[in-house]
Image 1 (cartoon, rainbow, N blue to C red):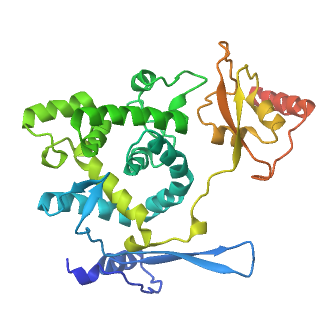
Image 2: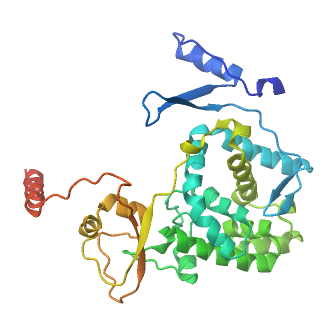
Image 3: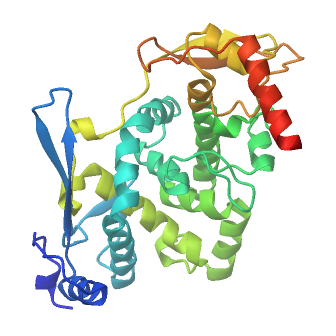
Length: 339
């Protein structure tokens, strides 16, 4: 494909009668532009947020965690280029990742610094989960995607009421401990990152089989073979979105939710009632504390937990309904289900 077709450009396409013609036209020109009009607090002000198809170029020098990526090698350059294309052109997904990055990197970065780890390792969490509290088919959960056994190995509590894999600060600390342990074994952050995906045993097995401990020389499974390249691609895009067609203003990014921390060392029988007592609601309480996995916190051992409570004014609060109204709703619901 000629390079001229990949260069950044804007075009206007008039609607046509046939969907097939439209799809064919878009396929031929291989470019598109869309914009969203966003009204600010001043209703008269209008701002344009746009995404453009841009030519993807692998920089002549690339590093990860202070370690050089050998992009002069054709296989390395092509592998990185692939991940750049996938992430730069997956506009909806990458826009969301960009927006989320400002909210969650501010929690991760100080912890990496506390453990004296390279700042680039924050992109592992982005690659692992897209900053979504998801669960994989293998049972890995949270931003850092720990399976239960590994979580417990790093002192994360995992049960039906509390799952600290969803506690960003505690899970990040656990990830830091794993990565530091891995670095002490392999002596490079690139290999430490790869081991986060495939595991220490799996990576060491391939080192023994292939007689090299250089990630860029190893033939690994499809997922692990792409893993570091995806992390590097995300780093390049997030660090300079405009270069890859994402025109973002500061106000486009999701900001951290203002909150205060409180400590709890007693049971909470009803988290919804607890939330209203703290001038918020159950939904926002769970959003800030996703590690609370039930509507109660039994805490029979009297363990001390830190909960995030949103500051007043963060979100307008809907009043708590009365006990009588709640009973009426439940009664009508039960009667309807019987009928």
